[in-house]
Image (cartoon, rainbow, N blue to C red):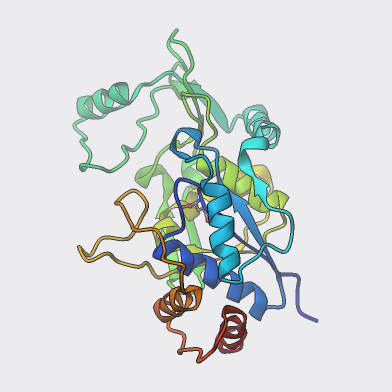
Length: 293
Ligand code: GLU
């Protein structure tokens, strides 16, 4: 008997699928099928200002052209606030979340005072200014909610199915990260952990650019008493400038006038042999057989 397998593809509808996101979609689908599992699509539309109206339906249409169809009704994060609030409340009750009054500028100033600066474009490690034991909000209005990383348990070790053993000390490398943003929106880290657990996800297969989030997500799972799925991070598709393809750096939408050709390209990135098929469904079948389960 094979253990239950539930996997997912969780695009943010900030634009159409690009070559990189198709790799993650294909890998998560193949891994689910090769394990006799269920494959879900979840629309990660919590960051509403970045979402593009209609991109969700566009992505679902693109996936369908490739033969990738969710086994269960698609879930949209934007209607799941109650679940995220419930998780935040549980963390607050346990003393694992606290309100924060710091603006980005406050954080940078606090780091400078301590002689710490940050590399350009990197997120600053939160200096803990609003931690309850350091005086909390200091009379200022709360802006965001942060997760209180417990320094003793913050060194997270986990094994990626492709990249091997990973370690991250969340205290020194990330700090107390945001759960609910100053603009009231739910942070990706909280939403993804709540949804993966609520949907019974056992295997997360996603792009390698997300690897760095895993330790934070494992800490949140532990704090909320949720199981940790198995993680597999897939190779990235690099643009001609050597940078990872993303919607942010203007990746072209996939040309799906020939879905099979787009799939073949994604499969190549995953190290799969050419499928020699006439239709996406046949190719998917061939790659499922070739996929290590
Ligand atoms: N929504 C995220 C993205 O599109 C993926 C999140 C995940 O797979 O955990 O980058």
